[in-house]
Length: 138
Image 1 (cartoon, helix red, strand yellow):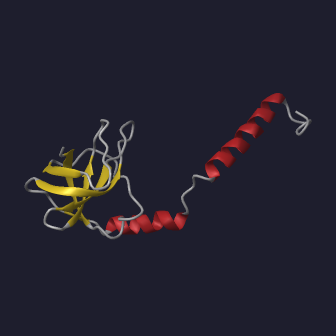
Image 2: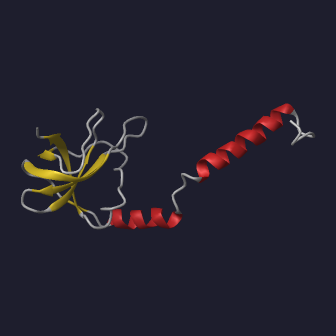
Image 3: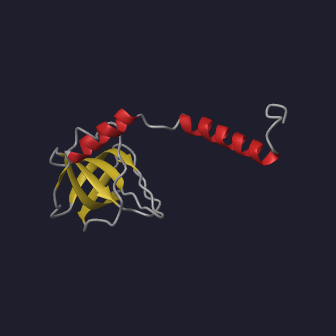
């Protein structure tokens, strides 16, 4: 390594490792003002208990993930009564939805998760939020 002639081989590797990490992570950083905005928006969500099944269409779907810290998925649903709600569900399978899928939303208890994935479009506009199971209607 001609760039760092005075460094030992071990230190050269550390310098390269940190420089690659810095370059790789810089493009994936979320600006602080966006994090702050999303946190404020999430604080305005109004949680309600879904009492019965409802039909609707998917407006937006953000898939969660399971692992050491499970994060629930976030589905924005336009109900058959023309109400827009957010459905939070911890699903650890290969379930996925696209915009305009017909779905059935069934009530469940609150999932054991560390939170829900946020989307950029509906974070602040859709406030009514419930925990439910979402199934695609074929």
